[in-house]
Image 1: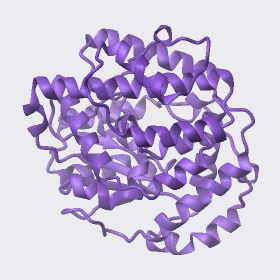
Image 2: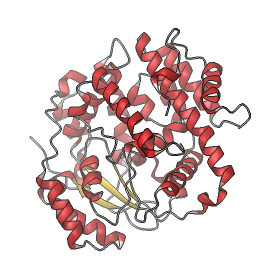
Image 3: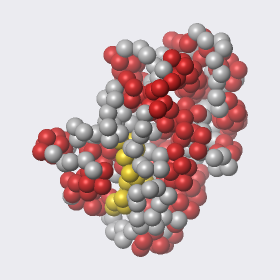
Image 4: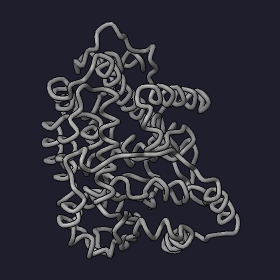
Length: 384
């Protein structure tokens, strides 16, 4: 992980060659081949021309991209030293769904099961680093502290903690091919370019990083979570054909304004101004085709996906967990139930997340009409 002191703040430079040089200096490697440099160039051009980054935002974007380049180099080193790591067979449980549909809650609840291996934030941020875990955790905690300072509202929307399970975009992002960048920044040209790319090689690299991460601390029944997987189910199935996929469903009238609010908060940490109506248009256009194409229990995987409504998860979380464990062939033991009950009784309160659909140029009635087929397909109840 690259710390604040590893990168000069004198010039917030988003030059690709400069960032590559900085990453090589961090690792001490001038020879190992770097991958996905073309996506990096597309992303950097969009950041430079479209994202309206503040000087501090440019510095943070620079650091993030250098971190990913460092991870690429470290990943290549680990594979060269022990290529057998990439032979590990993986049949993960993968939670996905439109953002703000309860995916994080379900991930954290399932992670309480002693038989489930759920990679945490510090692991996802440094999957190939060989530093002692205590150092990586300390660096991760510093990252969270800085994020709390620059985006204080974020912790009320999504919990960040070094020891909590985290999303897969931390792995795919190291290839510079991930829609998380279009959430973090206003980069429409990059988003359009990304829509034309195959994600199969990106998921192969995701698998390689996960195999290396698990070499540090192995475990069966690996649990992953990534809302963006919903857009790439075919490509995901090409790399993880026998994954157990859990898809969460919630009324877009609630979920869509919520993800718009999250996007506004995240972009506001690095950019000025932030156009909330543009964010509303972006998410409406992005969500519409993927939700309209979903069918209950249908997917490209060897096992049918489990489709779970947010309302059912909230009403009886243990019943939902029992169904997932049964599908995964994982006994729901007394110890697992006890840990999950303890988690549920703890509250796990993030704080109040307030938003209005109108802030993003959206209307609840408009959303209900647009997604009526999706609501009917999954019998999703309305929320007030």
